[in-house]
Image (cartoon, helix red, strand yellow):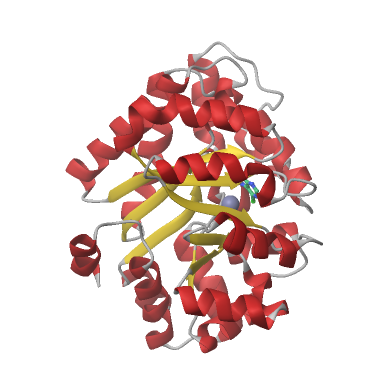
Length: 324
Ligand code: ES4
Ligand code: ZN
């Protein structure tokens, strides 16, 4: 079955590029930029990756990305991910990036996006993997900073498929970013946002995301199962949910595999992705294998997960059809 999963043409829709920064590359970039890391080896760094909550993860995630400084750094980061993606037979990826995690420490927006974009172009030409970028706002920063970032992105609009919202959800509901999302929609961006699995306010946040913001899809979102009206709303709109089993296992006590199965059985366009593979120790293949181990999915069900993913991509119809 592992060989079957490895051979499936895959689509990755929930991946933070900064979360693909492997310890080896972190050391290389630190050396290149003359920075000293608080670890003496790759093994020691990996051993420090112990998370039991989103906040313990985010602390290490933001600290780790400080080695990213220049355009070639962002290029190398994205190219390394796309090489691994190609090895796992990922044919198409929509890749989140967090510009504010870089501009807030003095790295210009254009340095970030030019490096990422150049890698996407080269990966398509050299590896045959197609990819697009999704710009995420950090929800624990002020909405005004998100709006400024949105405006800063406009000269690069052709390079960005849509916008998302990530980082610490507690106390930062979708509604906080209503004006930012309204402007993003006017500018032609498609809309997604994280509605995390470990939220006390999950149902209200998902309701706001769908009804008040009008998102095109939801990242995570398994909690719709707690409210029949949300299930109906997602089904009626044909919305997709990008679930990340191994990530769920880190930030909660469970992969939420049974929830994913339930969503599949209900006909929701649920997909499987890797979130932050360098930190959670699993790319999309390992996520599919972990889910398969728990749920004993049939080949048909595994293929359906990939069809769901290609169907909810932000590609024009003719390109979608070419993958389906
Ligand atoms: C994230 Cl796992 C997770 N949750 C929220 N925001 C994030 N950014 C990167 N990984
Ligand atoms: Zn995520």
